[in-house]
Image (cartoon, rainbow, N blue to C red; front, top):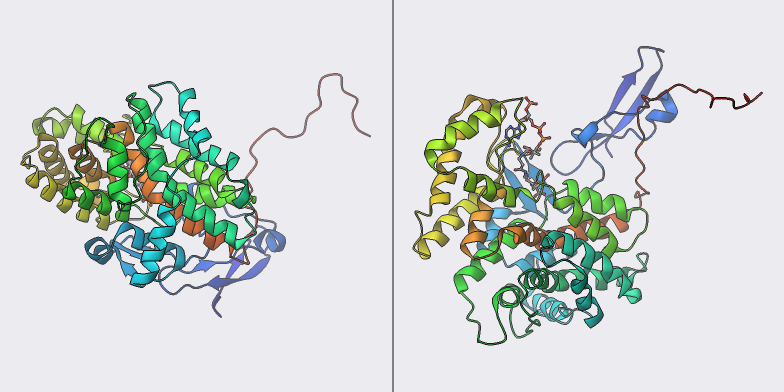
Length: 432
Ligand code: SDX
């Protein structure tokens, strides 16, 4: 809190209220409006929460104008270049980079939770074979709360920590099993002699009939994808996790709610939609037609992978992923992969177009990530599953921060009512 205040005057009544300003270590401050309704009988109105801070958080900082993203103060570019996903998990959850010993112990704890209860594995059989893997993820992750009654007391920090470890550890196993189920192949058990990413790739692509050779290039690319998607402040799915957890429900249920929210094409589902869009654009010559559609108010088509609520500059993650995409395709000998060429040309044209320039619409994290995943043989309907796998640690870190926040209360927004005035049911006796 600062000494700074703002004064709001209701010109209809002349009543005034002086409200404190909440100031953070960086970025925008916020007007504390908690007393507004009591003082002036008014609510704030902010559909989509474009000017609303829902909490104070020390986890991730974004400067949308400068294209800056920090996890616990560390620039995403440096973490992408030097860290590992599990080290980033430790940083996001515990607030500091681990010592080598702490990282080793953390890795050991995570590896001790990679298996699924055999009863839970049988849940997969209830899904249609062609179910979207995100539908399976929502169901299976929510069902975890039916198996871990020993860690659902959210008021107990030790329960919160073991739930965090379980979710970080089990997401790759759940994700890989969702894919295996959809192609009718047997599930592959985790091999705890492997690292986190190697384990995931092996569970995704190994078959019992032959040895699986891990491609170090794919490991490097997947490690980067997971680091870049790990957290992103109060985005829609993180806000969903915070709001659902604010009722005191268990983390398995609220992470399932976060997965459901992430699935939407305006959010995490965009990586899948970008590829579908690039598939539809048969050649770079067709790009102007799609740019025109994206600008046409009467056409619901949007350039998927472009635009962001906060980034009004290049999404720093998109820059990093674009370079990784180029390097990976080059290593695979397919640098002139047609979709990559189309994506580069689409980006070039859009960034020169007045509409996109005026609205500050730049490529976001989803614009290139799908190209990397496709180059690794990941099926299209599993792209958002990988986003969910990566973001689980962000949801968990934000949930733990909220549970430790003395100011946290159950989230219960109000409304501006625009419905009918009171009226009587036909024949009902009027109340005296
Ligand atoms: C993610 O919040 C996060 O941090 C999310 C995320 C994370 O890590 O958690 O970063 C991950 O979700 C990235 C975003 C992925 N989504 C897409 O790529 C889908 C395409 N993008 C859009 O749907 C849109 O840009 C959003 C949803 C991302 C942002 O929407 P906003 O902030 O609500 O902005 P808006 O819809 O009000 O758009 C502002 C203007 C509008 O025009 P006007 O009504 O002002 O004339 O820009 C236009 C929009 O029509 N616009 C686009 C556009 N995005 C915005 N026009 C064409 N193509 C687009 N992609």
